[in-house]
Image 1 (cartoon, one colour):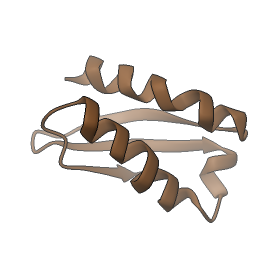
Image 2 (cartoon, one colour):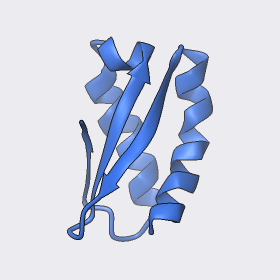
Image 3 (tube, one colour):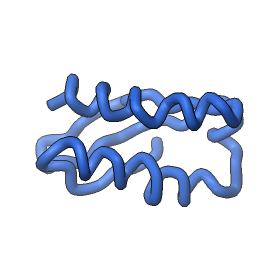
Length: 73
């Protein structure tokens, strides 16, 4: 599952990097919660929660079965 999540993150990474940010996979819990760290410009952006939920979480749920939530750490 971790490899599938990393592959899905790689599909959204170019959009994040275009705005000076990025994300890294920190952990995947047994209950399907993915923990990511937003870095660069995304780390301090006031829109980061929207990016996390409407962008990263949406893509992960579409591409990786079993994902329940995505959290920033």
